[in-house]
Image (cartoon, rainbow, N blue to C red; front, side, top):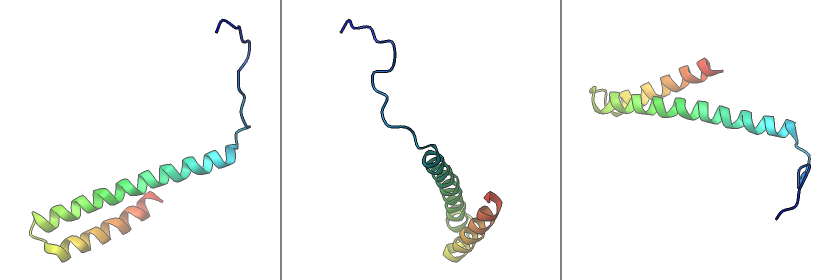
Length: 74
């Protein structure tokens, strides 16, 4: 308990920075596109249920917003 350590106790395995960057990019892209799809779904549901667009109006808006979002976020 009272031992004095001058360096790290456990160094562990060396980091694979390339794999870390790929994982981080995958997470960021998943969050970005997932958020875009949820927003498009909410907008399509609002048009379909509250604005009188019906099921097909909401579906068309959902598809259009997803296409526009994927093009915009690239």
